[in-house]
Length: 272
Image (cartoon, rainbow, N blue to C red; front, side):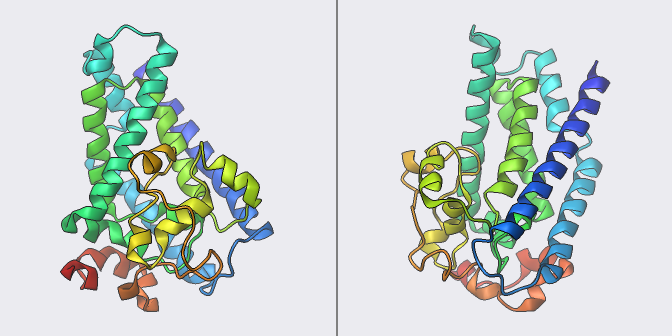
């Protein structure tokens, strides 16, 4: 049964990733939000190369996936949700919300603690904003994020179904809300009450620090409003705003080897 679950996890996650990536890539071609100054051929090999490296590293260092870990927690009845009688649908819904809150808090932590920011800033150093930006995270950040998820699963006893659904949604929304694609403004205004949209998240990738430290959500937009980190629009407008970090604008930082070395590179922000 465990092997069957893990086989299903791989099929669902790979299938969802490929499908969402293809649809969003097509959307970017048909309805781009901004004109890109750097061609995809300069950025995509490194951004997608990071995805391959992260996948291999996780399989090497953490052979147990989050779904496998959730199965272990369920077998041993770990976590507070196992102590609270509730229908399965309510347990899955609550667990999903708790996982999303944990990712929001983790995101803020990685912005506020200098040691963690050194890892996370690789994601922000991309000078363009498109679907591959949502996949560009330093391998060490990916490992830390996975360990945090393990801790949340153990603490709350997150059901296996909730973990699988959350992982698929987190990956899909990371691609979606980093899209360089246009939504009708009125539709965007309404949608961002229930889902983080590309226009909402693009503010988070501004060169202005007060905008970089806003709109931390990936799935649900409620946490930014609740914790007062929500910013509706960038001060320079979406088409004119500058993406990235001031200290990493040299094209050399687009190379894969430079991305991996970036946590140990000098940054003006480290002195702030």
